[in-house]
Length: 194
Ligand SMILES: [Zn+2]
Ligand SMILES: [Zn+2]
Figure 1 (cartoon, rainbow, N blue to C red):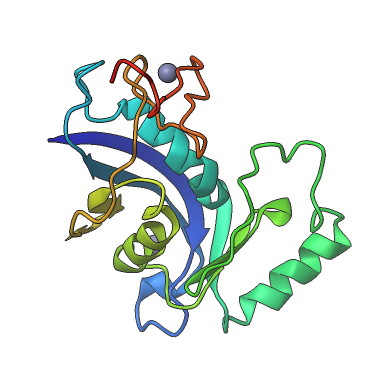
Figure 2: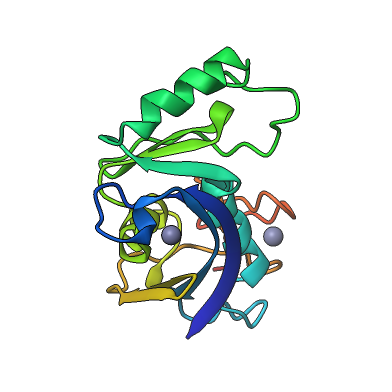
């Protein structure tokens, strides 16, 4: 069965060299829907708590929120970084608190201090799905992603590829030691009664 979580991202971008209005800098609220598939966790009768899917995703994806997303070859990039530098916000400000973990993949690199994501390909809704899957595929068994931004929507299905072991008491992922980081439940394979 699937658990489905949705989150919003507000961002600015443009399609560099695209012959249309989208070549100009503009902004959106994008809505990402993440579908996670697992067998039902009998302890809590859930696949995966939706707020936990959101939390896992948001830790990384908040890099895209209130952020500028530009392609690596876009000449706006050095221009904007120059202004950020001149105005003292390039390396962060005390008010820039909602920072995600910096990441670097083949498709995108995040600079949380200046709320910038630099992408290899144009950040269309299709491009965003590729980036998001790459960032989250090891953390969640994502079988479908849908991204809506303005009038554009893209969706892709992925094969089930991992299974995340979850706490039977609260439903969240166990850490690498088999312990629930929320309630302390410990998976004990060597338990004499089992
Ligand atoms: Zn756009
Ligand atoms: Zn727990």
